[in-house]
Amino acid sequence: MNGFDDSSGAPDARETHRTGVWFRNDLRVRDHAPLLEAARRGAVTCVVCLDPRDAEPTRERGLPRRGPWRSRFLLEALTDLRRSLRELGGELIVRRGRPETVLPELAREEEWTGLAYHELVGTEEREIEGAVRASLPASCRVRTIWDRTLVAPEDLPFPVESTPEVFTAFRKAAQADGRYEPPRERPERLEVVSKALEAGELPTAAELGCEGVVDDERAVLRFEGGERAGHERLEQYVWRDDLLRRYKETRNGMVGADYSSKLSPWLALGCLSPRQVQAEVERYEVERVRNDSTYWLTFELLWRDYFQLIAAKHGAALFRLDGLRGIPRPWEHDEAGFDAWCRGTTGIPMVDANMRELRLSGFVSNRGRQIVASFLTKNLGIDWRWGAEWFESQLVDHDVASNWGNWCYAAGVGNDARGFRYFDIATQAAKYDRRGRHARLWCPELEPLPDRHVHAPWSLRRKERDELGFALGRDWPEPLVDLDESVAENRRKWEAVR
Image (cartoon, rainbow, N blue to C red):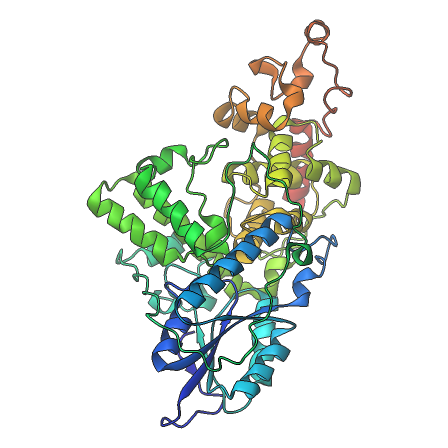
């Protein structure tokens, strides 16, 4: 997947190299191979295309593909990238339009000898890459580099199309020698192809649909987009607050900034690379401590790798109703149930608190994501793709491979040997929110309930409800389903078709 593509014409070696660098989900200047190599070879034009297709609605539900939280994060990341490029003597050229139109026009205008960019794994992204390549002048050589994983595909003992269908097999192969590529430095200086080229205006908040976004004081973090903010969070989490040493013990938390690294938004948009995170883990292991927690952060980076490779292997199958395993189970298309799930009004506190947190902050814990996905697919039996699209629209850290791969997994139609994987809500509540701190934070209606009833308001006896002045259907919604009965019914449907 690396190396120059010789299908386009090859420029004369004596020519001055003029390379366009196409920025996409890699909004940084450090550890950016296309930018570094282009700068070493000659002059550079750094381009980002604001593709109108990004504003098109999702296929199944007609939702905004990129909601306000991720849009604001993107705007901040672009602002930071322009600043960084200018500090190096370069510029971020902003154009509105389809890349397959914009990039060839710039290539002809500036007589580029090359175009360099990082590959992406989504099917739509790959189609766009193909359209760009087909539209470039014959004299413009293409350089594509794989960047989405900690372990490069060429360092694995199998081709991408043979990626194991079970994570453990992949992890053992990926960790065989325990060595990972270090991050690259940023260019020392950039020479632009033409100083006369108009830079173009960055998008406005109104243009991206994030004007007037209000931060909720209950949110785990104010996620600020950009390379600087990403490195600041990495520095704070690993070094200043020394939180990496207990990551494994705290990573399933649900309240506060520091139960996990929270690096996923910067990884998703490429403000940080996985190599940069791993380099800090390895330095920490040398300078402070090496333990299960340091290993576990690498372990989570490899899970991220796995979903990237699975997406590259399976392509459009990742988005099929029957999933990667081709399981034709019947799914419900209950509009009212789905709407209650999205709004956090299902009557199940563990579900509703997490769904409200997602809608009001753009983020929810990994534990919360698994719980609400299990409830949608295993209790409500609703089409898992609806859930994936809602997450795509709402999450500040949405990544197509991680999101859709995890939803496929949660629905039992992806990479999971267990099949019908159900998260028992009562057990999860007792283990991860025993006193109802998270539930009460996002569902203040539950504040008067004693701890033993906060995750099951329906279990209050009539006398207790009267004493508290609390009524189901008035102060808290009646549960949409009986948890035990609904999961049993959906298990029967699964067993019938698996």
